[in-house]
Image 1 (cartoon, rainbow over the protein chains, first blue to last red):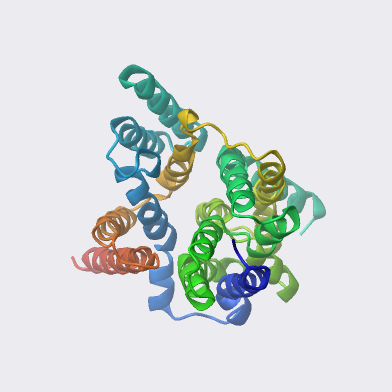
Image 2: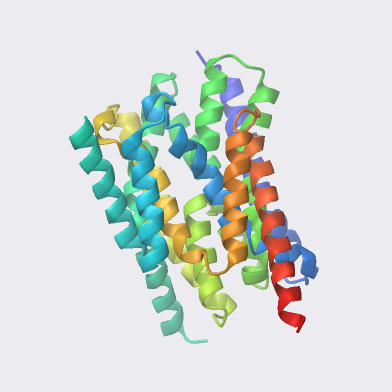
Length: 108
Length: 238
């Protein structure tokens, strides 16, 4: 059982802290120019962080208790490949979903 | 800057973020269910989702509180999971840093993985957007995401039934992100940044407090920046 005091402390401090992390640059740096070397790194934030966030979920899915799963891995590869070729998010999502459900049905 | 352009940017944002609806619904429902199972009442569960508004960090905090981990450790762990938000903030600053402070504060509150990736990929594609257009677009991208996060946390808390695991909606998250990232690979530097980040994230998966992700992200960003420099130098040379 979680104590009410602990719970509200966590909710409030975590809320403030999360806001702080989200606001630290947009809020404090604002319109001031950032150095070129920093901007050069920031250009790659999205293409570095998001694949890094997803990769472990693809290789060790939570739903299979971390066991490598062919339908999920194949769905990830298909989504990425179709996305790279078509540059179309919706077509990529649909291709991934068809691959996932198709293989889950065939192999399941 | 006319109201009409802002409105059409707002609508574009809604449209571009709509594939994430399928991701948010099961994720938010699951949080509602798990929070209720952990003994939180509806007000507490909703406060969690409204105040913190960060899926992975909320799951982490909830899990650790149930294990009676000291509060300081709960906070450090959950904030570490959210550390990537500071990187998102830095990455958005060149695009929306010139907006009024109150708008930046609202944008900060609704910066989540989904709104970030939708926003930043659009801003990169269309560098000529004005700052008010960017803010309007970002708020559009948030519109199908954040209200559903609140709404389906509530559904999960009240109904208490999870979406069956056999629906495999767990995998909606990786698929949606991969589809969203793919069009962003415009140069070799982007590809190398992603490859390095993926390899490091797999090698560093065992590092506690989700810090492997931050290390992987930084490694990928450095790899991308170095590749960009190298490509530029090659172009300059005869």
